[in-house]
Length: 316
Image 1 (tube, helix red, strand yellow):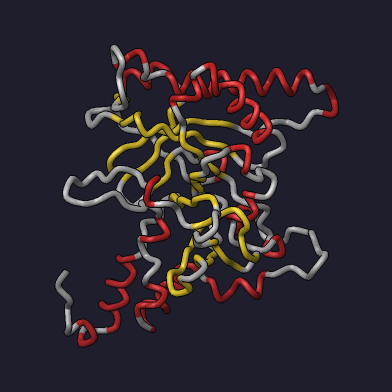
Image 2 (cartoon, rainbow, N blue to C red):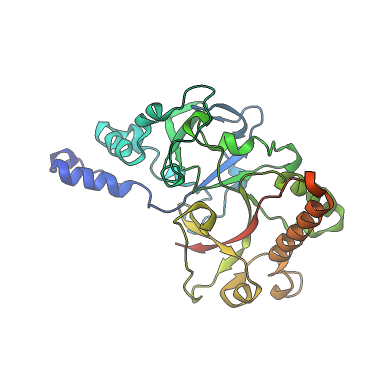
């Protein structure tokens, strides 16, 4: 990459404009985390050290959409993370955009649980942290609008009760009560009889009492280039149906007709593609039925399950 050595000679207004253009687009983002194992880098923040979340493993990276580039971490937090430490000017632009220095002033007193800010204010509020061992690589997120992908090998080992709080990178004194959107990747093996029972048990446990939406990402469902226009919603947390990573976006799939019309299956095929294109949507729908049955069977004391939804992907 060629450096523009005379950048500092440009007018300040133009330099600020250029720095601003380097910041991520104002869309709901995508942040990928792995499961902590010995030797991996935990995420640290005002809320403390995460005991479960760490930097994602290269072995789980999404396949690059550019044939000339290797697979990489497509998290939104990498798009502009370096601007926090590039220079004084870039840091000022990041601070103006994400307002991290003002977080201290919004803290509630200890043991004070009244929410002062409106949901709209909290929706637009960012938080930040960094990976252990890399304090100069700042991770910035919007807890109430971004998607947090968990690349954990064992669903049973996820602490579903606290994972949302850890991912928020914030203290509860900042009026956050965790994140709103958590995702895991759909695995075709879940449809096999040998593992279906264990997976169902883990997911039924995860969805009960959770205060976030659980999304399933199907890497094998790609939106067709000639598909109809997808109407994106991003005004409030519960309406969001599109999340932007660095090289692709993840879009909701909730209708069989639209799935067959606007999406294509690009995963492994034993016989015909149409034998598999509905697998993940059928899985999500069956899980919804199982959750409803479990809730009804639990009677008055049963905890209501969270919402579960499905995502495919499309080029930016």
